[in-house]
Length: 328
Image 1 (cartoon, rainbow, N blue to C red):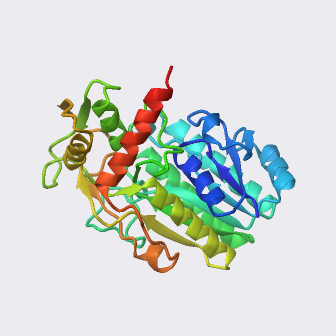
Image 2 (image 1 turned 30 degrees about the horizontal axis):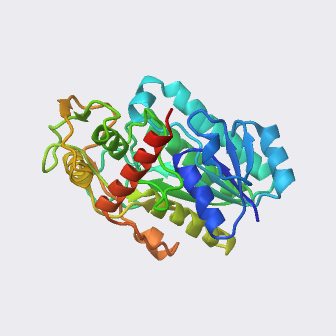
C-alpha cells in the first residue's frame, strides 16, 4: 500500500523514500520545498508540492493513491530559531500537524508515524532516558513536538487510528550508497557544520559553551545514523500494519559523545585541523541526553547497523564532497 511521506524531499524524509523503495514499497512525497529539494526525490516517485496543513490537497492525494499510512517528517527543527520565533514553530509543528492528523482521520488512513524529538524530555535528571521519564521540554521546538504527540494520542483514542511516535536523538550521516544526505547549506547539525569546516565550506566553527556539567564541559548527545533511523520507521510501519498497538519509542544508540569528541573525530576522519571558536551557550540546549532504546529494539524489532561515529562522519563527509562538486 502507498505511504505518504511528508517532508520527503528533506534530509530524513529523502532517506525514508529510498528505504521504502529499497524494500519494494510505494512512497508518495508531499513537500513544500522550503528546506527540501525536488532533486532529492527519485524519478518515478509521485511528488506533490504543497503544505501538510492543506486538507483539500491531502484528500486528493489520499484518493489518487489509496494511502494507508502517513510518515510525518515535515517540521521546523532549529532549537535557537524556535526560541526567537515560537509562534512560527507552533504554527508549523503543531497547528499544521493537527490538520494533517485530522486529514488522516477523515480519509481513514489508519497508520501514522510521527517524527518527534528527544527535546520533549528537556533537562533530564539522568541518562539514559526512557520513554517513561518526565517530559519537560525547555524550548518551543520541544514543546511544539510534545503538543503534537498529545494531539495524536487523543485522536487515536477517539478514532480508528494507530500511531508510533519516534523520539529522535541527534540524527547525522548520509545514505551509505551516496544517494542523498543533509543538503541544506545553513543547517545547524553539529556533524554537518564540522564537515563543512573540514572541507573549507565555512571558516571554522563555533562551540556553544564549555561550562556544562559534563566531562569536558561541552554538551553530550546520542548520535544516530540516518540510515538506522529510517530503518526504525520501516520497522514501525510493519509493526502497525501487523496490528501493533500505539506506542512511543526513542531512537538512539544509548551512548553519548561530547561536542569536543565529535569535532576530534571529524578532524581525524577528514585529516583537517580546522579552527574552532569558543562562544556562549545557546538557549534551549540541555547539558546531556542519551537514549534508552530498549523499546525500539524489543517491541519494533529494530537492529542498528551503523552504530559507529567514525562511519557516520565518513558518510557525512562523502556527501558534503558530493554537494561541493554539484554546486555551481
